[in-house]
Length: 333
Image (cartoon, rainbow, N blue to C red; front, side, top):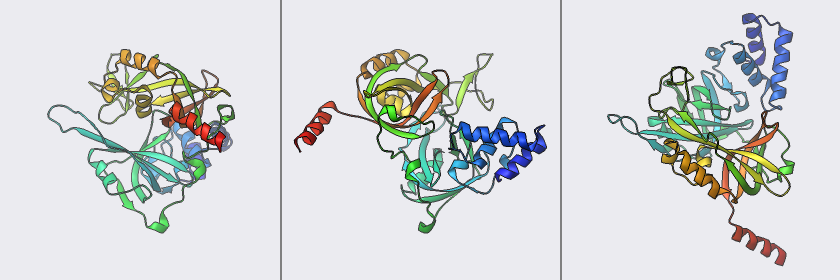
């Protein structure tokens, strides 16, 4: 649906007139600092006001128009990254589960695709750089508030011809030039920074997820763990989400690490994460302070702290000795 069609449907199904809807649409675009298109913003406004447009979404989309809770999503994109397969245990009578992630991109942005179980066979048939078309997928909201693509029973996936593979806009990829922290000044942008990890905060370092789907679960008033769809989960698993402070000498910035990056920075294994071993995480956090890191991530505004923070997408540790040797080589040249 075009933005105009969505606006018309919102007017038909709510008590707002067109001017009110357009004002909310403009506010939403301003909230996302231009990172969401008019069409994408219209979907978000519709969702906030209970207007269901999912069943009518069956045309090709650009990635920047894809938002959470959409149905019948059609998208053509370039495969930018294929993760390793992770396995997890199910009940004794069931086979171990498998999960794998893809990152797709086009000229407007990137999106993660989660593959479950037999869907991981798709990743065996493609390579990074290939173009694929996905039809009749759906989206959920990930733990960073972004849209994540899921493949349902009716999904169709096919290869794109070489001349159909979209160009990926480097300004929307994570291959961003390195900047000092004092130059990190815009919400929703991708940055690459290098600095020292001064501290990791370990207050509430875990959240719970469904062990098979990865969906976030919460404890209800009856003490049961349920997903947003109301499914009861008997034995949820833990997932890490910790924040730390990075200092590069020009400024400091709060950085949030999820999942793989959190385990990497803390140097803990998946079992520690799944079992929500707080004591091990607290010890690991103390040991992690002082690491020199290169971090790539996207910024968001933290209302509680009233400042920008970075959501880490990838990171690597810098060996101090190697860094000094590089500096000496530059000085001697």
